[in-house]
Length: 320
Image 1 (cartoon, one colour):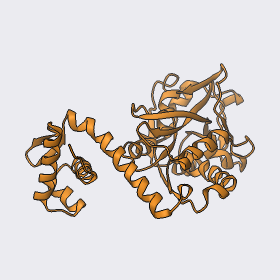
Image 2: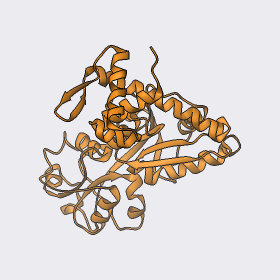
Image 3: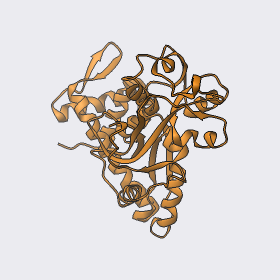
């Protein structure tokens, strides 16, 4: 049996596009040549990889099993090409994915520390950072489009390896003046009646909001979904509603008096952040060094309000 990287590339492209016509354009082949490559791959493996449905090709059980292995092989080949092109192991580029809160508020400080301490070893290393919600980062890891992910909350994916990293405090905030009658803690029933500013489903912040507040608040009776924590922050400052956000996000607004932390009968809320890689990912020296530095690094409370992962106290509510 002689499998080629080109066959695997065509297979992956057909799997992603769902047709030989679309895949042919992507890989610069004719449709007939693309179909022949898939037929030859199925012949070599002695198994069908796709279910044929009209003009669509859909991965069957065999194809779904092959896809992550094919992606891993192609990723390994790309790593070899990058090393050859760049001439040194430590010069290889590193592709990082980060969920939005980490990407906007934590990653810049960590990258500055990482590049400062590893400048001599990293040499001319280049980094590409992709920022999106937690689901999109995990999708990119599944597709070997990035080397490592930094996410807020667990991935819930069997093929991804999660290492606990930092803990993030979450706080309920609103525009001032905001206090319950008599300056008492806001009750759960009062919290339920507020207009809530929420992230979209698939966001780590939305997941943790649902998981942590769900057991205490029966529902969000009124809500507005916004696509970023920064948009929610701005809406909260304008007094549109209340929000449960990372302390990393609201730290400056709280200090400036633009927002106030809403005292309530809720327990302390926190979430676990993770370093995530694909189980089949070949770990280069630069990627291993990045992970080691990330595990050794933490931000002081005075810098950003986050701490290295540790066991939560008994009065904290945590996602894991």
